Image (cartoon, rainbow, N blue to C red; front, side, top):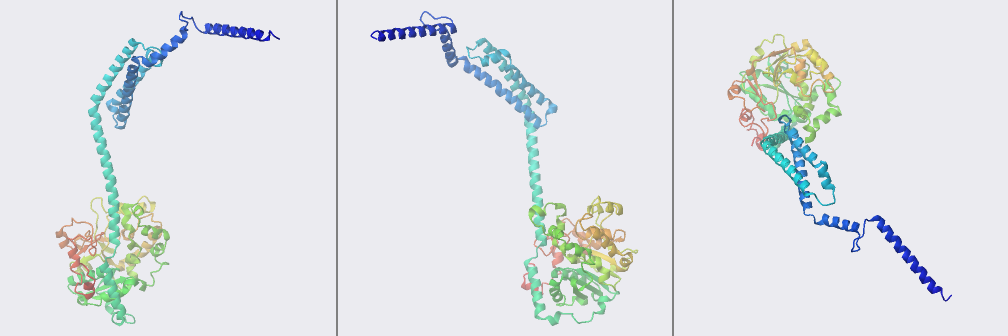
Length: 540
């Protein structure tokens, strides 16, 4: 046991020597030789490579050349892409820049250069110089091509910018037109405060003195049904406008006592109308004021448009007044005016039934002014026609094609799209011919077919054009001059020679948006001397 520690030390020394020999032999197998200084040649090689990677002065130069080549390759690609956008294919610019880009790619993919980029060893300066030379040649070519193409690019860029500007301005103009049309529509629908005031004060007078203005219980005056007199039909809910029509007609009539005016309004405005037309004698003319409700036959079971006006979809169409909705169809935006919901606007199709004892009648809109004696209309030979009206077509404008849907087979089969349209506002009707031709039945037939608005949009002119398609006699244009509510270029000479001037359009003469050059033609027939008009500051 005394020899045990010595034996253990001998065994440990033997194991240590064996391990040393093993590792020495193993290391010798993995490396070439050991230098005289005792350092492995393999480790020396790795050390030098790492040092070269960190300190080789050619490496930054190689990186710079590579970056220049890549930058110009991308530049050529971008020019090619932009040339396509500017549609320069025909000038070969796209092909030239695409080839330049490929040249740079091909150059950098050459084996000797890819080896240069991927090598971790020392950089071969001669190969680097060759790469630099080729890169510079291609950069020079690229810059030369860019310089030559610059003028073309600049011109195309200016053209493109101009196109973009024009497009943007057109978009703004379209939006402004829609907003303007919508604002004009709102202005046209509105009732001026002073006009509303007059109606209210007249109604107040009617309530305060019912005995002075009521016709209830009184027999019908014989003049109202005398076919030998000159009869007019005026359908309106605007008390001042209706009074202007009657005023202007009676003041220009040679024998006003032979003229009979049938004024029809709604129940709400009946009292105001009754007072207005009893405040003066209108040069002896005879005036009848009635409410549409007085004509009992005008109900939804007989009148198609009344039944259709009860439709929720149609009411939604009329009253869809949000800007984004109301401007969806700017062409027909004017038909969204709620006046088309009023049966007053459709009474014109029932004249023979409303006035069964009359043979002829002159229909007048409430936005017209009479400037001459109109009795000459009763002397016109109607040639068996029903409707005497002034035609409005010129060139390709105001033809039937603009008012109805000629893609519908019924419309296409029945009517000529080039037929000349005529105007409502002043229409002379032969009621006997109307009854003979059964025009009201014709109107009902087409109105029933158009319940879904597939034959025409809204309004009364399209069904009028249809109903009186072959029964309209053209009148001389000076009888009825239109456009004073939208066309500022009408000559004063034409207006002076007109028997009737018509403020059709949104710029009605009683609105603030009326055209100043035409407004006096209307305002001179307003009864400003009436206390009700003065109290409401109308026209100020």
